[in-house]
Image (tube, rainbow, N blue to C red; front, side, top):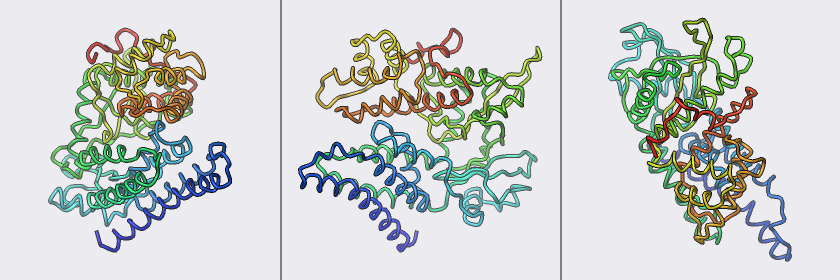
Length: 436
């Protein structure tokens, strides 16, 4: 990366950070000078305006800034809902790189020209993300159609530059603001995982681990990786297409019952999360395909293709047991059980007072008594309460699982169903004792 580009990225990010900070701090100082209560100020318009500023900066700079925006879009426990709503759109708005920029990475890693490996290689990508983009191609050796995921050139240096910039900005922010949002732990967590995400061999291992979990299940398919055409920066895998799980009309036209999609998708994720303790942690509609399969007795049932294992998570032993206890305590309104379940899941409070955990649990029942579905409204209320109370640490595992179930709930409601975790735990669907 040229020095002028590093300077540009640093300057632009610093200016955006300064504008965001000033939009909150200056009105607060003015209110203090006037003797008015700044807590009564409606910050929703400011949150939304700043979220779009961060979004536009991320789309312009790409790289880590998109990844950071995507992470903010998942952390309802830390950031206001306006940020989550706007920045979660980064998953679907990542601009692709020109073919001429991306193909040298493939040729360098595979040590061959693209025409020597593929008879066809589409110049326009079929998908693009924060660290890589995907092209459809045809293998010269076998004639098989494949999807080739290629990492962006210089992305490792871009990530290092952006990490250094955001770390400096957060350090300054935390030094001068007496009550900052705790961004530094978020950055440290990102730094820990980004090195792994930049090595595509880990993603391959994750996809093959999930494939092994479902090797006896004909309703789940994971694209098979061609190892001889894959490296730390390139993954060549089976090409799959299908219907998005939110396309209700498309599912019905294919003869698939939307209710079957809801039930089976929940069963798949409950199996990964509660029974096996390892899951693909980003079940947004772009990472799931649904296709029809005709059974021996003539019925049409859905089968699912799971994609993109860059964000995969191994859950700690006992997590499934703790989550089950939390659900049961919410249903029975047992405060002692609620506290114990939150502590088993790794929640901590600044004061050590367990009553805060009861407040958080009650927020999960604010819309209606919990009956087994982590609705988007429930998770929104939960994380709003967490932001407003002195919770010092919300375990990342819980945030990712809560977000996954919330996304599945959104898919289910689009299809006119309910993503009920307890219903998906019916006998034969999951064995929670394996991770208890």
